[in-house]
Length: 335
Image (cartoon, rainbow, N blue to C red; front, side, top):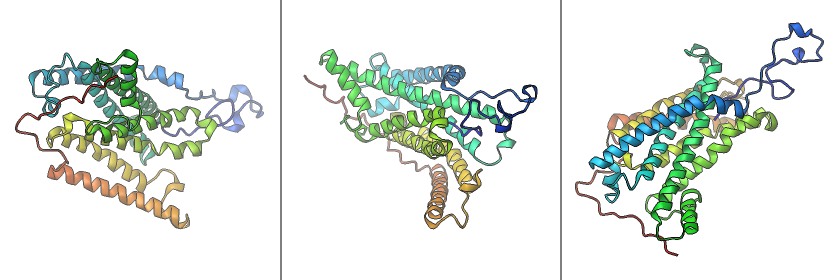
């Protein structure tokens, strides 16, 4: 989830023109200081304040969910009445909290990326370099939050399968959480593989930035475009499986509303790409022209659709039940 940094991809230093490299004949005193290549280690250190902020937000969301579950006003309890004790299901609540903070950080890093790759970045209130750094650090934090979300969900499943031995409990929790198609209960049969797809795409696509000098900038740019797929899968997973946004009320509408700036910036990015080679013009071949034109039409349709959802309030949510739903946990696994 990293921006393309206009630096050289070869040589001992990055960002230093060839005429100024050692051996070019230019006196060392007249050469600018070489710019260091951005490394994963340096970004991990830079991401510590961002990660701390994410943990604070996660803790606040966890307390909010705990209070709502304890008071009986939680939508999660409305969906699953058996989950009325936050002390028993605290790991599930923590998984939810990590999921929501992860989605918020994913929203932020995608926004930074679209601002970087779109037109008019010089008019932003922060420098290009600062925006790049924010994009990289929020990307790393997002991956960590997504992993924590999945791990806490697995921990809750391990706790639940108390009738199994420890080896079987660990395997069941791992398989249900990380093996696509293994979880076989309710909406999770569809929603969990979608979330797994987002996680399994996010990690390699985000980390490829740090080896772009080995795979080539062009290859990295082409792969990096699929980051938007990670974000779409994350939102889709939330809408399907996030019990706090199941019903057609303001939380679900707000989630849809937050997608408007993403869709608008993506449309602007496609209509006015910073790279001339990505513009919609004659002479690029019919298949490429058709693909680019289709992408712009789809992005425009998404913007119109999101506006319609927000204006009409028809956000795909379910009707909140007037009586408690008769549900129970899926049956315990047996040896």
